[in-house]
Length: 422
Image (cartoon, rainbow, N blue to C red; front, side, top):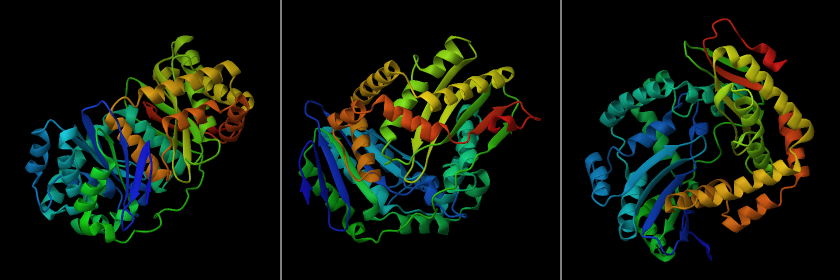
């Protein structure tokens, strides 16, 4: 079964999906394998397994050891990496167009033929513990974990993707290998490629490289049910010079009818230098250097957050302003001028963000995996253009009227910030 341009999709026997975008005039190609497994799929004793496994797949396969994996890509000037999210994991490479067969072979070899050897588990365990320490040293990152915990609690969506030192130390070789063998099934994967390529070439390379994995059984439903909507405060007392906070609430799942309106609302509230929050918190009052809002969407849940980094003595004022702006937006939405400006910013950001083959590969791969379809750029722009001020008001009323939660890091040994939820 094959559909035509601008994106071409083929579903191989066994359920593996291959989606490509041919980009004339470039000399590069990007290739990615998107696995529909992430940290929310981890059971209580598997916290951190998805990210741990992402590391381990680079340690060696039946064909190559770790040095060969890295050296074969270095030898052609290629880029190769991976990342883990809450609902998927991606392994990718970007190379010269002539080296696309090599990229397909190497990345597919990692995903389908990893050794997951006991000695590699032990050596990489130390690397991940160091990565956790590095992450913990950046309160501007950690505060987003605190906010997720405030929203979702002990649900896997409320836990850190990377895991904790305790959970990583507790993961056994058998647990990680079992996670790999049981979860990495062809039906749960999407192959995406973009650049100077031919769809038929990519399909043939993938079909040959995947071999028997195409017949693997899918792992089935997600481990965790839809999370409860919690409203809480998570405070981490640290002797930092700057306080970091995220104030927000539960938002929309990724396929909700108002998702485009919510994106416009987010852009108008905190998506740029002309946004309300940037103007009120930074430009008019000088309370913070960095402040912005963001939206994150999952299959059955979402979050909307406002971040600010400020002096600890200014936290209460920043929170007061942020709460007031959210309340105003919940009641009135955005002005027509703000909606038009936000839509223009979104159109430009979308198109400019797709100026390289890696970004194009990521867009079509993620869309095929999490939405089940790939829209053209023109289709996406049309969805943005179709948003009206009334749509934005509806999204604001639905999301911003919900109870607030707060994640905050700073020198606050005796403050619980309970009044934020009052």
